[in-house]
Length: 376
Image (cartoon, rainbow, N blue to C red):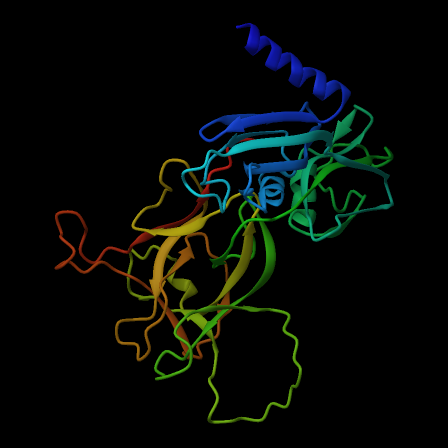
């Protein structure tokens, strides 16, 4: 008991008079914690064995910074799942960290008629925490946060007009000069990337890398690539001759192909032959991301990035394509009816897959999962 009290007291003293220091060994779970309105700022981290010959994880600091950046608290599991060490398995490894608590919320207040401009640097993205459009405490727009999130979240910079036109749900009188106050964080995305097919945005646990349109090889072609691409909507070219060359591969925009007489279709059949948006997303604080075919929720311990339906080319297509997870809430850009690249939903066929487990002819759900964020 005395040793435990001494250990807690030493952390308290370090937190008051300087950086907090935590020590642990494999199997420990250490809690990094800061007060309200502040976040973890890791100064140093060591995972390994200092005895000659020294060994360990040379990227321990950057790994931990990626896991904790912008968070008020984080439960850190000290093991080889978190850190990658070059130590021999027979050698004991220790962990030492020093961190500070820094203010996390950036704030800006602007008067009616002005423009509120906020930005983040070093590739970080805006995450709006709170927004108030009001006149003193007398009246307000209850949807102010939603408005600002729609304009600013996942962007590196944004501008918000401070006016009743932008904040149309304000219950203030026309002669009352409202102000707009925005509180936000700049969040770094350091985890793996995934492509969200059928959406022009990412989940709240991921940042937008770029937006585009789904593309791939021709439906009835016999060559080019076999995997789908999220082709950026703002391309750049070294050359732009436009001269056709029959010895090159071709890439086409993908259209969703639906059975227009299927009254039970899981996707609105009015979207038949519409092109498909896509977004490349980077997970903010996870080390893994993957798709599960056949589930609509993630396994225990993992967070859902988005859910949808398994899709690929038709079984009659000439070239095999990747299986992708098409967002169940997909947005479509309208029918083009070019029938060049086509995307179809995928159905179960019983046989090797037993109908005691699977349902014949059923569309297959899917979900894209990441390691669950364990703390805020």
